[in-house]
Image 1 (cartoon, one colour):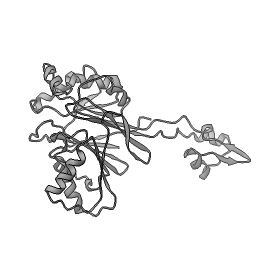
Image 2 (cartoon, rainbow, N blue to C red; image 1 turned 90 degrees about the vertical axis):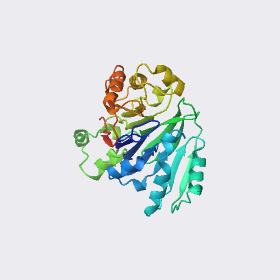
Image 3 (cartoon, rainbow, N blue to C red; image 1 turned 180 degrees about the vertical axis):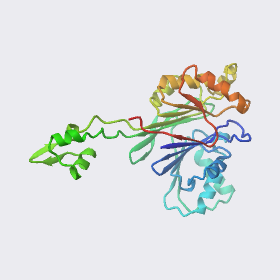
Length: 307
């Protein structure tokens, strides 16, 4: 699993800092989280096969999170596509897509399925083989949600010595046991638990942006292997963050700490901070969570299994 940071900015794009967007690649599937202005440019510069994106997840319908969508939809028509493109987000995302298609006379040669979700209730919004994607409520100036991709548990570690001790020969029977299925050998049923360790957790990716800090966020992003979290403002800007319903970098670090996230990337920076000043935001976040880093446009992040 890999995350590609396509844009890190909030409110307005800057040279070298496009608006917020993250592409997640998992075993060949592609998922886009938000689609701010400049998303296409980063995708092209990273040379990703992005025209086969499976689903786009929108946190909310403020312009700096959706203005890249029309271009993505039109350019996706330049390749053959048999699978539908899912676009998932809070209310008004369907109207935004339909009005853009109508006003721009878009040529679309594939199916677009827009699903509007209830932003006030946590829920499963997408399911694939071996994983689910869930939404959860955030607190912003309009309906807004965060997302988390959670992989299913993996089988435990297979111990060949235990299999050999039971006289099970190497070969197809080992493979069956490793898939979690019992086998019959010498008139006896051998269960996977006799030759394997306990199930191992899958990976977890979480995306949180445009929200007031509140303690409830942590439970949804608990134990994330990678948490991408807004840290829009620095110290001294708490009042403005409260007014605009955003988090400070210090609060982003607090969410990471409460969630015991293995790694946290700050994103959605206010344009008031030039690149050289972003280190101040990082320092503030690290007061709570040492495993925090600054996201940069076109950064690639590998998300490995931990065991």
